[in-house]
Length: 255
Image (cartoon, rainbow, N blue to C red; front, side):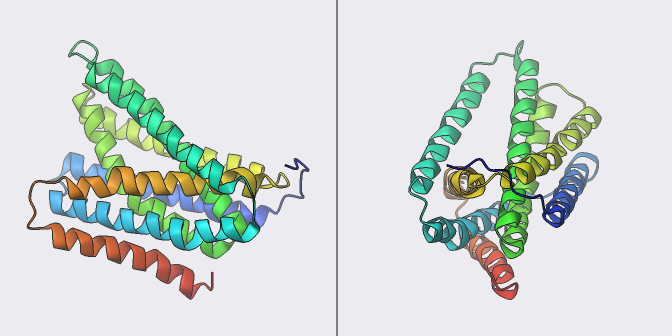
């Protein structure tokens, strides 16, 4: 694995940086809608979840996995599997803290969730920067997939902050501030993409593993396990719409 530093092409930095800012603003708008108005209906949130699942899996299966196979990196699939396992361990760790939290410790769990939210947003930025460095079309498709995933996730994080004892105002501010960790992630991803071989050897498996895990382990089960089965056909349709959306973006942009 080469670590040669390549010349920095700053034209690859600004688009994903703009993406991350748009992501932060759109997530904040969704949280404000929930916090200080009548709120988003459960059906709208589940529709976003379905679209996010379809979008993430579409990018993973139609873009990232073929890209990893094309470059013929022997470690790509092994590292992708490792990322999936790491996500499982991290998520389980957070859930254990949550399950064991009493009313006395629930506030501390809010801070645990805060740290987890920052790390997640940081990785989103790294993934967007790495995807854009591979190709602008892949970067744009990845942005749409991440955005569709982030909206319901940020709403969920806001609910966790409120449950942990924060006021709605403070929860909204914390949610907004942590979302800007994605901008830091863009700078990290941009720097790492300038290391020879690092983009394919590390960033591509991280993006692929995270999209596969979040789509199949977090989002699809939310639709599958919901007791009300009447809206399930609509939610499946939203999964298809999300997949077609990012697939269409890649097709139009010639990726």
